[in-house]
Length: 87
Image (cartoon, rainbow, N blue to C red; front, side, top):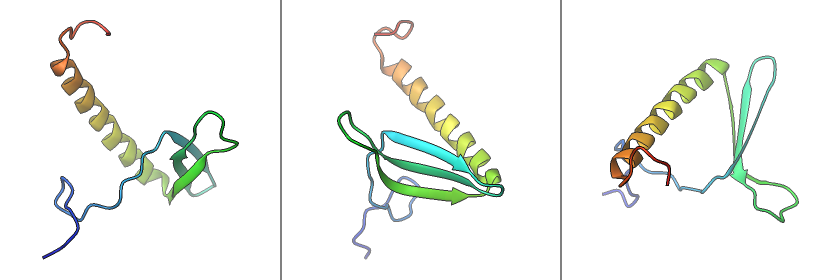
């Protein structure tokens, strides 16, 4: 029996780290995304993860993230007592 928890997709869940900072850059062949934390008073962000990938994969990443955001917004509207107004 595996001692690690499973995520919603059924695979072993990796450690989760809160992220509130993102920066992106590119070379002629790759896109780089850096995720980390930055708080007021910090001299610079603390980067936890750097992804380097092909631009085609970034297009899929954006599609998946856009769908996740749409689902989140729909669920938030459904849970809101005033779905037509910002609270």
